[in-house]
Length: 325
Image (cartoon, rainbow, N blue to C red; front, side, top):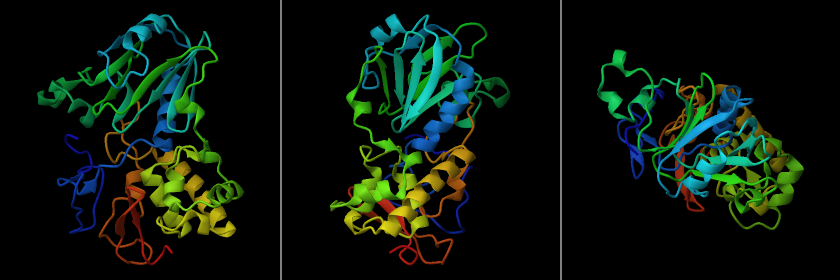
């Protein structure tokens, strides 16, 4: 994935170190399954909206056709220039850019997607291009590179807005007025609105692990690996436990934990565990508050037991064997 940001944003316990596939040995954090989740997308929405809402797109620049473009770049070139941006909404992990003609530009950050302005300054952004070889005083701001798949040029004094994605798991597509898309239509309720009765009902007769249920976007839109682990820890529930065995009381506690963790991450600017940066180029702060995620082999901050990592439903899961049951 290129160089890792964690060596300067995350402080490990002395001697603590992760190992294995996906671990960056310069910082010891497992980056292989971290991606922007609901908090990172919501922070992006809140910070990019003041730059775009009420403004008009003067022109766009794209890379060539690739997996990023569900809608071909040529089509975006035809429909986006001249459009006014009326609002920016969020649905799960998707950003919905509402345009004046009632059409919508949909953005999904995927694994390594970044949406930021031309005014952003960040060591990690600058390191992505040849400008990293320049002296700091000569670097200025980010310059689009081959991974910058979409540039929105805004009328007036800008700033321009870039969508950059190294691994190309992100998605860009345009919807006509009133058009539905399967990617959005199959999403469940927003994770910030989950409650105990709803989670309990969703868990009935489900033989899958409770963590797999939390990650099912058709059940709960927006939760990913980081916040599922963190919420399960707060609720005292092991990630591998069968969903159907969740009691009503546990479902209530877990629903509250999901909302609490997501809101706290939004407050701190999200988690910059991998490539995520806010639109101004700044890192999030929640990675410094993690209780279990990517802390394999380190002591539990509550009881001192060793944090365990295991594979649950083909995804890594981190938990405390004492605090969670």
